[in-house]
Amino acid sequence: MPRIEPLVPPYDPEVDRALRRWMPPGVPHEPLRLFRVLHRSPDLASRMFALGAGLLGHGLLPAADRELVIARVTARAGCAYEWGVHAATLAPRAGLGPDQLRATTDTDPASTGSLTGRQTALLAAVDELHDTARLSEPAWDALRAHYEDEQLLELLVLAGWYRTISYLANGLLVEEEAWAAPFPTR
Image 1 (cartoon, one colour):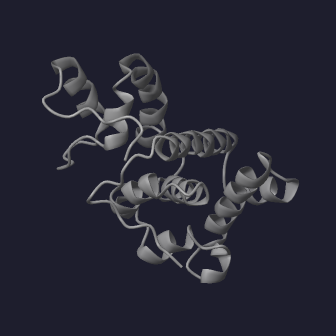
Image 2: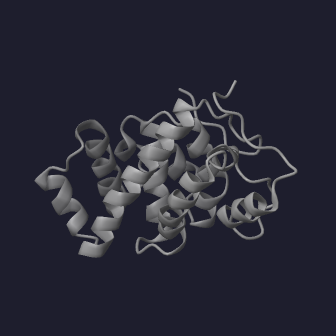
Image 3: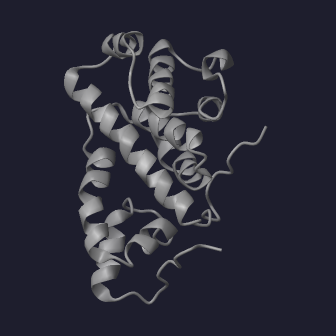
C-alpha cells in the first residue's frame, strides 16, 4: 500500500498538462505512479522536472551509458520500481540488452562477460559512490579514459538524482507499474 496515493484521472487540466510533459512522447501508458504522487505537490514536481528532463532528454552521456548508470543506481538502492520502468522502456531504446540489464543487478557485474571496459568502469564508479559517496583515484581514472569533464559532472549528478528518485519510490512504497520489467531475483 503506497504511503501517499497517486492522483487518479480525471486530472485538473493544469496537472494533466504537467503530467503529460513528464512522459516521453508516444508512450501508451498513463503517467507514472511516481509522477502522479509528486504532483500532489505541484511546486515540488515542477522544480524536479527541470533536472530530470534535462538529464534524460538533453544529457551529454550516450543514452546507453546513462541507462546503465540509472539501472545500477536503482538496483543498488533496491528500487525495483524505477529499475523496472527504465528496463522496460528507456534502456532497450538506448540499446541495452537483457544481459546488460541483468548485470546491473549482479553483485559482480564485470564477471557476467556482457559489459565493455567502459561499462564496467561506469558500474564500478556507481558502486563506489553508493558505498562511500566518493570516487577513488583508480575509479576516476577509469572514467577519465572514456569521458570529458562535462560528461563526468553529468555522471555524478545523474547518479545522485537517481539515488534521490530511489529514495522517493522506496520511501513512499510506490507500487510497481504493471508493464514494468520485473526486477531479477537470485
